[in-house]
Image 1 (cartoon, chains in turn brown, red):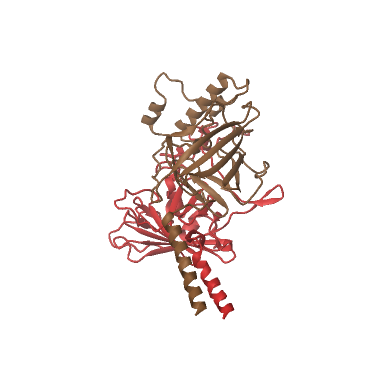
Image 2 (cartoon, each protein chain N blue to C red):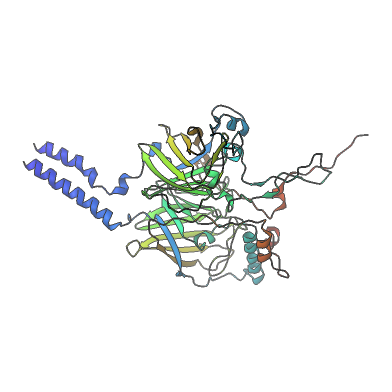
Length: 245
Length: 276
């Protein structure tokens, strides 16, 4: 009889726990998965403290390089991927977190299954770099290195730009009971920043039923689009060879 | 009596675990998650040969085969990087004039970098899976992403057809089963055809040792096929690379710059030395 009572109590407890977790839809504390949107008021970006070597000419050259990347539908990479103008689909698996933008840029992979970056001997620098991630309490800490210094949009919010020597540390943390995803970005680069450059984005969680939209077209051979991006008389976006410092 | 009670409680405990903890899919050894590359298990030796091994689709009378017999891009080569030249040269190019092999490199079509279409029937580029309880992301190093929703949502209606369609999935034991509809009309490997109404069922099965992936494709459409069109693709885990003594596997980023003239060409004929 006592056994029956215990079993019933256990069943009730189990069912209550299941019902509770389903009803609250509370995200697991160490899971940042979801659809996330950066609203117009979601950016807290101070001005970067740049080295004197970062001249106006260098910044202008980078801006031309960014325009070139847009004109030719290149992969745009970091930091653009984290503010692409559309929601991000973030999914956390057993070995990696993937961040998928809704445009034709490569997704990001944040590897949970290794603690060291891929050796420079074999890693080809890329627009997104090589990201390794670990949980520190309730914060996912992501370290990224291995950036390509020229490709994609290299301009960093607040000032400066990405180079091969850039390093990015991100801290992802759920706030407001999981309704908001706070991401603090800290860039360091001995050739660009006098002090580490930090800024924060706050993304709103979209309903779980959200349907990511298919990418809008980016056709580098669309003449009308090219005329729009390169109006008569405007300086033609520089090629990569020109943008090199 | 007491031990029996304890045993019963222990047996019931798993029911109390949060749903997401039990919905993560199969155990680690047979997880789909990770990096894969398509292989040629029968030694066909070429993309054409791989495509030729796909059984021909049994189309209804009056339905015109959409894809090449070998499957066009889906069944065969790397493709997707851009369109071929409109009028290929019939003779050798003069010295210094490059052979143009891709007229519009990097275009990818379908909204850029294939918009996920390349992953319906992957080519030789690496592919990657990340498994979450609500969604599996299927991504390719050559661009594009497919979303497999596991949260029991329905296919939206109405739905504007897209290159990769709309996919919902579920686990059947260790197999991920994905149903896709709403793709734009086009060809299917093996000479098949698809319309937005055509239903694709994919079964992603990882071998017990976790090293081999088989995708079984079943295309079904009573307005197109006499019987469901079935074929398989085979993959292996991406080879591990030596990173300072540690084996690693990771997603590569394929770069293609449409503004770079070099992307259009493969060979520039060198100066010819003519012996007299």
